Amino acid sequence: MVQTRSKNRKDEILAYAIQLVQTQGFENFSYQDLSRELGITKASIHHHFPRKEDLGVALCQLIKAWHERRFAEARHATQDPWARLDIYLQWSLEYARGENKICPLSSLQSDINLLPESMCKAIAELDEHEIAFIAELLELGRQQAVMAFTGDARHQAMLLVLACKGALQYSRIHGLALFDQVMNQYKHTLAP
Image (cartoon, rainbow, N blue to C red; front, side):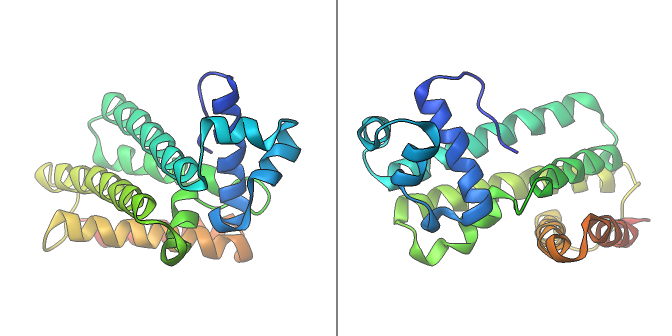
């Protein structure tokens, strides 16, 4: 789950809003829901985020900052592409832990036709950010001859991300073991 670092009012709003995105979707919660849970007025929320669109863009920025920290940690932790992939998959599983939670980015994507342009742009940037990390990881694996695939690393990264997000969704119904099964099968397709 994406977490904020400090505990000021704005961070509290973002931290609870990300939970609502993960459990209800962006379009299905209101400032009233935030107000009730956090024990603050709606005016206080509007002070930090005048429009819900502003809150949505801030949530995308929060997710991107989380991605950047995690991607940097993975790069620093190991040069082994398989280990980096396992780290990524472990983080993905973190999204699925907890009652009825899904990846916040996947949740935002499911509302894409209802969201304002500024949020759609921020979500597209998040998608690219995640795909670029995976493409880098895959290309490293190909260069080290520990992974094999044909075609462009970016296209392969898209397949991997889609498999991961789909497995997360299906695991909500069929259990987390399904996630491991799908991702282990996918890893076999990358073996040289």
